[in-house]
Image 1 (cartoon, rainbow, N blue to C red):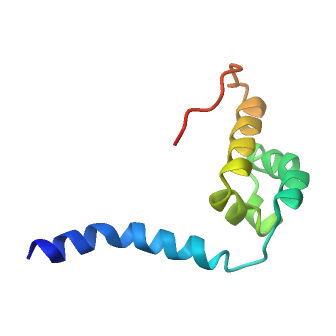
Image 2: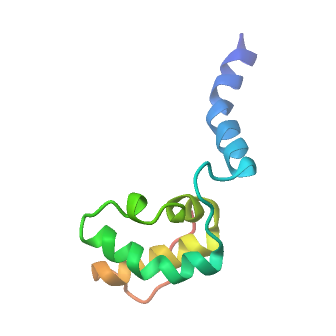
Length: 91
């Protein structure tokens, strides 16, 4: 019985791993494209707009790319006025 319990706990991790290996379902965005779109993406988020719909692929790229995700977090903090100059905490 403990095996079943343990396998249910690892399902979300396994599902996330499989999703990262398979890549995004929608349009793919490279790091270079993401960097070019990041200002616009954060501006849309700050305005309360649907940044995912406006810039397909960026959200998926940010979820799978630690470097671009860190850039997004820093820019988002800067726009929100919460950037204290310290590097973002590791996740």
